[in-house]
Length: 312
Image 1 (tube, rainbow, N blue to C red):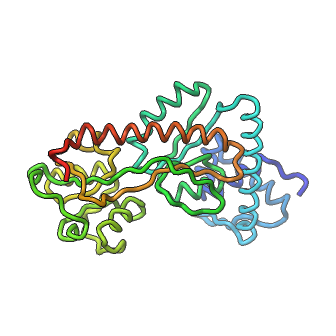
Image 2: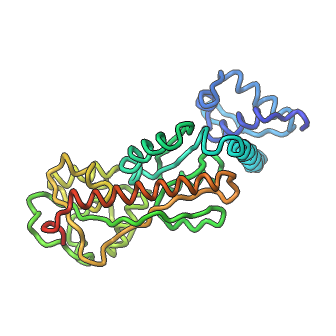
């Protein structure tokens, strides 16, 4: 075991994550034979097989599963040491890996990244857009530094910082603009279009409508808010979208947007990061910037797209 190297551990982690020698080699920017040699040397060092190999796939052995857990802890610790040194030398600079859920990313990131580039020119931002469950997993494994998503998360290993709240608005065909906005308890009478399962926004919308989250599939779920709004414009139903999405998603669709009667549905947007992260002070500065940008975007969205005579 004395011959284990950090490089081998990183290659092992990549192979564990991708489950394929070719993809893992690409992720590590080395050749597949070179990766195979390093993994073989790692297994020789442990004296115990880490992977089961077949013609089509590889999978971790039982020992390999336990080994992978420890390796992730080691690599996360090494990365945090690097972050600690970097922060001590230069403050907010270098690589910063930010995860964002899909119902926030397209609307917040363009403005946020411009502000980040202006305020922290030495910061190299890497953005990962995916579902909440994947973001939390990658955050736990040290592959992300922070994530912007809907709260609460309620994970004792994470710091949770609420930033701003935003309401959900009602989107319907433009031909129905003069009709009253239905109350939440009446939305079950509408053909409600929702994001596909896995999106937290879907569950939030169903909760507001008092509908079961496991409602029967009607073949009208969308993979993005853009798809939902375009489907509404085509007369296929109605939907809910967050305030920030209004300017982007409704500009090219024949739809009407309105606020719901009080109490309006809403969600809390925040940032999370590991309690052990040495970037805590820097991430708090980033959180302040995200808060300012988010509040401005949602206020502008309502002012420009929901004049009083069209709201409930």
